Amino acid sequence: MQSYDNKEALIAEIQKTFKLFIKEFDNVPGNKMHWRIAQVDRTPYEMIAYQVGWLTQVMGWESTELSGQKVMTPSANYKWNQLGLLYQQFYDQYTGYSLKELCDLFEKKVDSWCAWIQGLSDDELFTPGVRKWTVTNANWPMWKWIHINSVAPFKSFRTKIRKWKKYS
Image (cartoon, rainbow, N blue to C red; front, top):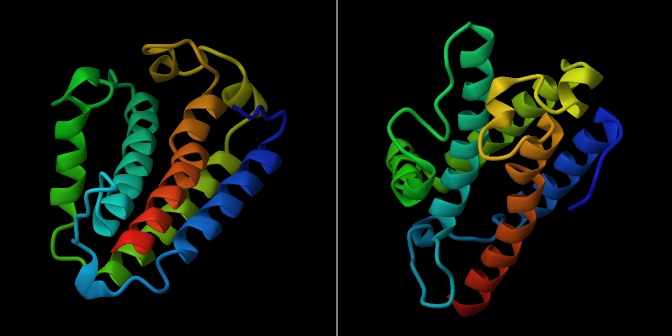
C-alpha cells in the first residue's frame, strides 16, 4: 500500500483514481447497469453504490465521533463478518437512481470526501489513535482508513468494470 506524508498527495491520488474509475462508466448503457455476469462479482450499479456507501459510512464514523457518540464499526446494524449485508444495504439505499444520477452522486461524495480530508490536521491524518474509530480492528492512522476506502477500491473496481465491459 502506498504511504502518504502530506494530505495534498493523498487528495491528489484520490482524485486521480476516482477520475480513472468513473470514466469507465461513460459508455456503460444505463439499461445494462444491473446486468450480472459470471466473470465479475458486482454489477455496474453495485460498484458505484458500494463506493458511495463506503465513503458515506466512513464520514459517518467521523461525524458520530466528533458529536461525542460512540462509533460502531462497520455499522450499528452489522459486524465486520456481515459485510455482505452492509453492501446489500448500500445497494438498496440507491434503488431507483439511474446510473448517471448515481455517478453524479459519487462525484459529489468524492468532492465532500476530499474537502473533509483538506480540513483535517496532519496530527488527525497521520497519527494513529487520534480518532477512536481508527483503532477498531487495526490501530492505523486515519490516512490508511481513507486510502482503503477510496484509492484502493477505486483501483480494484476499475479492473472489475473493465472486465464487466469486456464480457457483457
